[in-house]
Image (cartoon, rainbow, N blue to C red; front, top):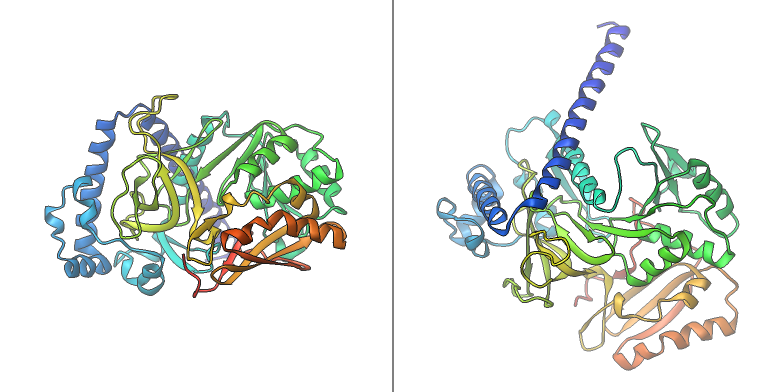
Length: 455
């Protein structure tokens, strides 16, 4: 084959691939919007149908599940759906790491799948295998969530991430299509924030699509220096990390507009988003099935009681994850359709964040960062980034990158703000550092804990 023929083949292949991606995107978008009209009975029938097909297929064709269910005495042929789901064993990240190859459907061609890693924010990296194009389908699902707050396909977006671009050689990257600009905040500080503001203003985005840790850094610098974006945005669309109440207040103060967050994870099991201005998550029933489990693996059904979010994804038939314990925690809203929008989707009143976003007190109690009220304006006016490091229950180090000169008076002010934690069983030390590394995908780990310290 000549060079010109190879070039033509690449162009044709790319064109056909683009058509397929757009088709899958539209399918995810339309399917997700259609679920708005589903009743509780519609959702239950859908869940039963998908779960029965998924479990029976996995038990028959996928070695990991065949062995898992045989060992647990599960008769997959008799499985009936939601009512039998609790009889199945759960799986967790460790299973992906140790048995990932056996969780993949045998005989699927390499060209038909995509491999990607997940778990960078937890420190445990696992490889996922999914059908080619699944990410386009999920992107359509995410846009269906965004659509509810006014996002239209074609809106201009600035994407803020903490990851380096071109190994740190570039501050930004224009994405294909020209409607999206990715900006790195990895090296952002008071001295270079002007260049970032000018870049965003010049692009004139409708929305900021962000990792919360990345836009928090920008927002704190803007508030401290008195600068603001010259071009107003419609809002801030958060994803991939926990969003705390103080961050929502900060984003509204600095950027105006709405603040919206969606929940998803790299394993592609479940997907949900806030309902307009409320921090209540509505989960898409076409995407997967959500359970909450207590520490013993029993279903949590009572509203307001926190349980571990456990997902069964419907879309990935190459490497299905059935009853996957996510290490994220949430609590159900009151049962029945949403009183505000009327949807019958599963709803969580709150997602409390990952197990990694807890500190452990001296008596072993799990203490979420959401309960640390010293994380507020004073502290953030003094720092760029922060991170808790814990090697023993009841003891932790708060590392932070100073944004101002750390005078003895300022250090004492920070100590006093966190002093109440000592009475609760957490002795805290403070350590100014030159930098705090991001994960490989640009996320920030707020808590780094040794394996010996488990809630």
